[in-house]
Amino acid sequence: MKQLKFFVLLTMAVLAGFTSCSDNVDWDPSGGGKVEMTSPDRAFILNEGSLNKNNSNIIYFDWASGKVNPTCLFAQQNGRQLGDTGNDIITVNGNKIVVAVNVSNYITLLNEYGMETDNISFAKKHPALGQVRSVDEENGILYVTSDGGYVSRIRIDGYKMQYMDSLKVGDRPEDVVAHDGKLYVTMQGQNYNDNRLAVVNPDFKTISYMTVMQDPNKLYESDDNIIVTGYGAASDNPWGIYSTSTVKYTQVGNASAIGVGNGVVYCANSVTDWATYATNTTLYSYDVKTGTENKNFFKNVPAEIATASVYSISVNPYDGRIYLATSDFKTDGKIYVFNAQGNYESEFSSYGINPHKIVFLK
Image (cartoon, rainbow, N blue to C red; front, side):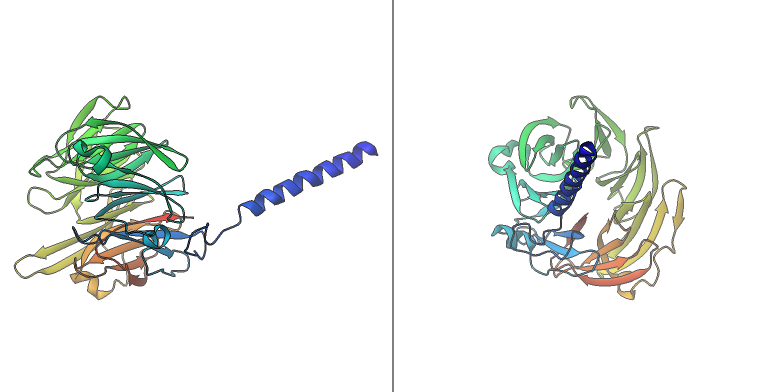
């Protein structure tokens, strides 16, 4: 009986411990900051702003409810402006955000509420590398491109960052993706006439190059494929797929903006006649596994998108929603929301100029 009583008491203590742990992970709307967030379903829009205007910002919205906070989250939480020009944003381990700010030339580490915990000023500490452009992360290491020709490694230790080293990869590297220990970097060249994808081996020394399109731009990861976009020799926005398994690049189509999720590439091709400034935009999707293009994927598309410039496309990994962001390069952009099946749902202001990218937390 004594043994049974001890077992019961021990079980109750363990269960109480589980309850206590569960209570500790209850949602905290503010996280100690100045902005209350309605739920853990958070999304953050990085608006580039205008060059040399110091008007980049980060806008928070609840992606489950659609409720938007129209004021710059970074400024609210940190008491200063983000800088000039916000060029990239990523999430790390579901509880950190990293932003690369190009002209101000620094990277910042934020917690999941948008409060800055650390930053590294390349302008002050590493000016010879050039201005930062893009960032990616793998296994606790950040990889940052700088337009002086380098990719840098920065270790994340909790909510701090530690610069490690840099590698010269060529003229004017733009975007970077880390995949299975290797780095993939688009090389634009000083006169935007390079046409290569640099592949950096895990030793962070050996580099090989793959021909893609002239003036390659953005990179996206889909399984073992690297999706490459660029401006092209004819400025016709080619995009294609580099297979890491076959080590081959195949051009697929044309798109001025793409987003990737669940093995599907969501494409917008905005073509502007610079004599009249008239823009024509077409939308479609492409299934990477089957190689199938679907021109009818997006449904009930608002008419104004056909003549708007789609600036970016972001995909929510948690529910598959697709966010098309448009820009007139002068006023606040607009975000159009489509569900995972391609049906139009809603729209709202980006509350900033040139919405570059949206990242999601849960």
